[in-house]
Picture 1 (cartoon, one colour):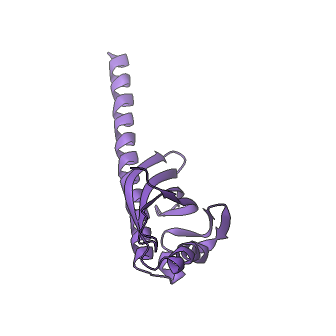
Picture 2 (spheres, rainbow, N blue to C red):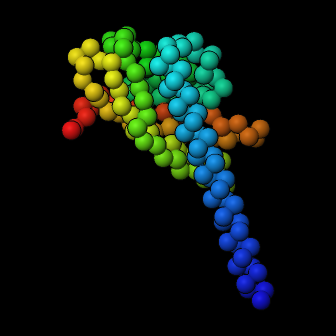
Picture 3 (tube, rainbow, N blue to C red):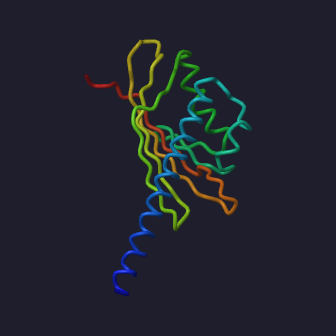
Length: 152
């Protein structure tokens, strides 16, 4: 009987942990979408991103290393300046959350439109997140790859 109760408690704890991870995963995917929505709206004031980006965030954009919220904005702006109609949308997403370590990784598959040559392109973002003591999540690393033509 005691073994059954112990096993049930373990299963209940795993169930709660899974629900928390799924909820956190949805939150982080939503935060990533919010970041892209702001960039798509051409919000280039880096202070608008301080709520979800660490001040020392590291951004890798096709091997180019950028730093801080301003680097995050500059990376998008550099591409948008070449293709003023640029719009980035999420086609698929996945989150891997470790509640015990207060860390998470979000993987986004992207569709990029609005390039001058009217090609549709695909991309990927891998963002790393940490939870602070106040419960807030911020991204401390962003890896962005795009420009690959979609295959039909």
